[in-house]
Image (cartoon, rainbow, N blue to C red; front, side, top):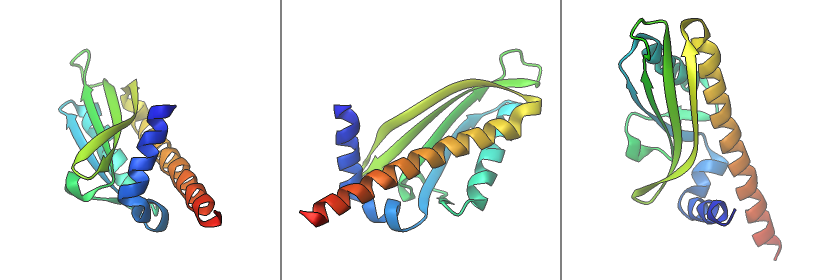
Amino acid sequence: MKVRATLIILICIFFVPQLVFASVKIYVFASANDPVGSQLVYKIRENLRVSKTFELTLHENDSGFQIRIVTLDPNDNGYQTVYSVVWTAKTNDSFLYWDQLVGICGLNRVSQVADQIVSKTDEMVIDLQRTLIDMLKTKHNK
């Protein structure tokens, strides 16, 4: 809890305007050499591109949040992937761990899993935006 509060304060200091008042710049780093993993990463990026909440960046240093995803085919048959997703937030020149997720995705669930990952990203950003707005209101009312 103490670590989470410290992270919120650091993020508040370095990119409050981006989080509260504009679309959130996000970068997707991917290591996905298997067929299902590649499709999953593609679908995540496509979902982010059409989102009004996020702006997909081409360079990590241009983003406030990052999604780091690594996939591999456990059976080398092209029908499923095991994935690891880590969300980080940028403050100055460092990246802070925010959350993580590990799962298995079959060929027939690529869109559903991509939607879940983008939805989880959206929930995290909205929660952080609400917290920052509340902090700004509290500070303003003092």
